[in-house]
Amino acid sequence: MQKIIAANWKMYKTRKEAADCAAALVAGLGNVLPQRRQILVFAPFTAIAETSRAFAGVAGLEVGAQNFYPAREGAFTGEISSQMLHDVGADWLLVGHSERRHILHEDLGIVADKCAFALAEGFKLMLCVGETLAEREAGELGSVLERQLSSALAALSEEQRRTLPGRFAVAYEPVWAIGTGKVAGPAEVLDAHARVRSQLEGLLGADAAHIPLLYGGSVKPENAATLIGLDNVDGLLVGGASLEAQSFLQIISAGA
Ligand code: PEP
Image (cartoon, rainbow, N blue to C red; front, side, top):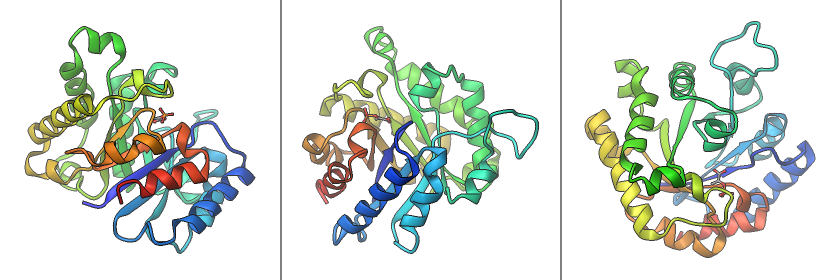
């Protein structure tokens, strides 16, 4: 499986900063990209068009949005629909990121609605799952992952489930490792990814083998090669270290 290296630019970058960073990525990719890596950038809404323009015509580079409202259009003041995001060049939608679950209070029902809607609208979907430190310490890792995965897929039609390979990825992101500098150790990543894979097998059968599993949480150029080399790690989701093109390029080429 081609490894996916995804950037989450969170609420950073003006349009010019995004365009400059995206252009630096294109220029710096050189020989690293072909065949071995697929690059995604989850840009802030206002910079999606610029990022998409900078990536136009370059194979293996795609743009996503970090959020959307699961309706085509309507009286939802302040919200952005997936079609509006398609219009500015987004191919992927990120759902269930811990900052949206924990800071913006998105519950399992909202995450499930968004997953079903994103797929119905023809997007590729990246679902984030992961436990808090308190949940891990209480021995709840398995039950948290099970709850987040099964509820997210619960609203999908049979047809949507069948067509997940190729347009669905799961990012395991322990909440305690996001933006904290604490990276999960190899044993923790192996354990969590094996659990996610086996839960996906229970939910999707043989198709689970074709769903990329990404690790996210304080990925840096220094630890990227180790993480990407682990069993069941099909990619990385990178926040802070993706904001600088040079550091993201080092992560992209790590282990390639
Ligand atoms: C993220 O935002 O998904 C993330 C993993 O952030 P960071 O790399 O900064 O921990």
